[in-house]
Image 1 (tube, rainbow, N blue to C red):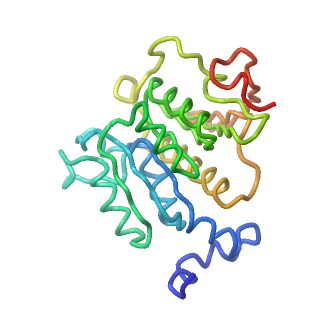
Image 2 (cartoon, one colour):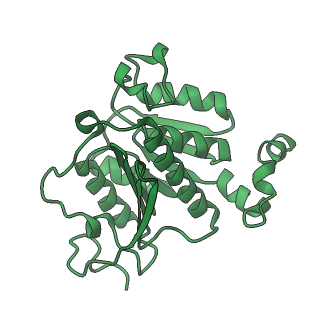
Image 3 (cartoon, one colour):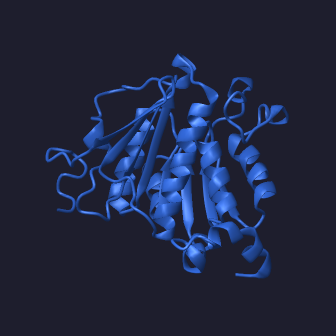
Length: 250
């Protein structure tokens, strides 16, 4: 770590749980972020700012005017551009020392499995169940921890699924693949700071996993009601009949 990095990350280095060793782990780590919208914006900004060495940004969409209410990586000058290109420029300004890889297409099949296997952590910042199920399946197969978040209207939820742990459920233990279950922000709306809060929490969980500190949100689902300012934590158990992780671990 050079003098510039010592100063840049000094407030994190002061944390005894993180210290020099944890920061070195962050600098050497690789996070895959799928979705550069409302959740992916704060996730990528905080991971870049915190010094995660390599970020792979995935999104096949372009910036639309309706995105700007909540997708804080992008501005009016980016309208019509691929979100990953706009995100890369914003993140380079934030921390030019972070290596940024971009994929401006939907990851599926072998391509998704390859990218998941390359990463130390995967952050699901997508907005539909089909993508979430595919990411979960790839993470379970590769043994890569997954930080999953969702937000809609005034509500958000967060959990961590870690196939390295015998006691960890997976996303399909929480939701079964029974067709397109989902509701999206474009159909139901969302208050801008709600995605910011959930995305920031996803970044926090990802940093904890990468640095090897704290207790990850494994086996728990955190639910936030912004209107009531109410937080709930629910226990999640492995589903013995889960089609993905039933035979995985203990």
